[in-house]
Image (cartoon, rainbow, N blue to C red; front, side, top):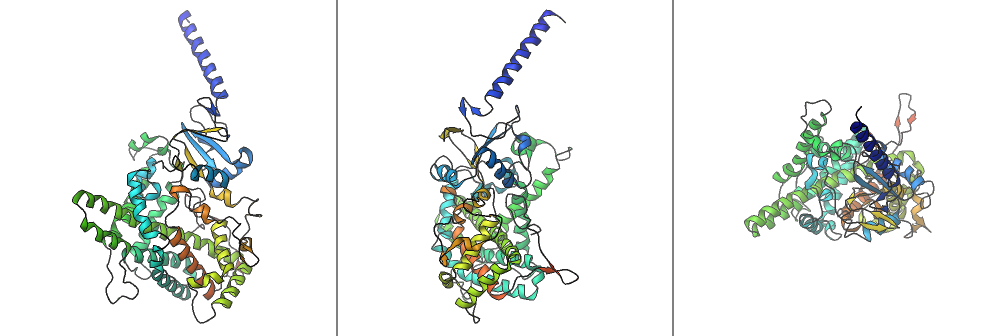
Amino acid sequence: MTPNIILTTSLIGILLAFWWKRFKSQANTYWGSPLPPGPSPLPLIGNVFDMPNNYPWKVYAKWAKTYGDVVHLQVLGKHIIVLHSLDASRDLLDGRSSIYQDREVTEIVKLTGWDWNLAMMRYGQEWREHRRLIHQYMNQRAVHTYIPHVRDGTRHLLQRLHRDPKDYVYHVRYSIAEIALSMTYGIHAKDNDDHYVHLIASAIESVEQGLLPGSFWVDFMPALKHVPSWMPGAGWQKKVADWKGETDAVRKVPWENMLYPTHTQVNRQIPPIAAQMEERLSDLEDDACRRMHQTSQNTSAVIYAAAADTILSTLRTFILAMVLNPEAQKRAQRELDNVVGPGRLPDLSDFHSLPYTRALMKECMRWQQVVPLNFPRRCTSDNEYRGWLIPAGALVFQISWSILHDPETFPDPEDFRPECWLKDGVLNPDVLDPAAVIFGAGRRICPGRHFADIALSLSIARILHIFEITPILDADGTPKKPEVKMTSGLMSCVDSC
């Protein structure tokens, strides 16, 4: 070996040793400033092997016991901040909303075609236009316009459940989709076999399975999207392409088939949301008309998709909770019997006299969240928090699961306890409302939260008032106690839903 080669090899070895020592000393720093604590990263790839694939919110919750309520990860150069407490979430997502309102539009979001969705859109003029439009139709006053649709849909749900209680999963899915289709597009779902119900169910699969951070490597290595699908390991591309076709159909097909109410339809004097939006287009110039048409089409699809899936997931949790907690079910039914009586169905005007039923609904939302790992925010500038640096470009997750399963706030958080929301027989305002967590925070708070409250309230109260929810019986007639098992995607629901 020549002296030059020996010298070069020695210099490389010294530089590598220096680099390794520097990396080890700065593993939890960024430009000399400390980052929040977290699992130790590996050189170059960071915490790639620490990223959980199954039930990530539960893994993150365990990390919080070791590292605290603000945890840092780094994956292939991308910083991830995980918030486990309400204080940290409010301090950053609410208190500093001006720099925590952006989204990271990942490659998988674009490849699956969900980048038109308000919830996943980058902050900017386009987002503001979509948000402004959806607020006009989903604000607290406007949602009362849709109560007739909810009344009809829940009444039809009761009829279907009475005819065929075994297929309750489909009946709940169908009825919620029926409500969303009717109020958004004026479309009336066909009984028992409707194209639109299957359409939204297929499209939501991409959200549940594909949009969970770390599900696809293309989010961290965008060049993978150019790899031909026939190559080994690239079979995911066909799945993603199928998802995109279904996502596009959710946005386009109902819009193209919207219906206007006729004078013979009862309680339908107000046109559906999409039709109202379309009527406004005639007053706009060409460029403005095209832009507003796109915004209206996107916004209508967001209302339809979000209502059809998130409400369904909570109702699935409700049914599971009632099977496992018959005493809670009986207590709510006694309250409904006393307030409503046998001659009619519960209505919204009854709820001021139904504190336990309201508490039961809140507990369903807390016990198993639809989105236990909230959509991440993108921090747009360096900022300091508790002496740590949160770097620009970091993805910031609020872990709703951790907040709503904090034993200091909710003793025995795995148990289903509606009474935790009550004090002296009325709702206790001092207990954290799960809606303040699961619907997000700051400028990204879910605009459909008021409608969700109406739909869930009527659905839960009416099912409880009419039916007794019991376990399935096995071949010997013995009740089968179901397992509390949720799906592991970005949107979580009772497994097999």
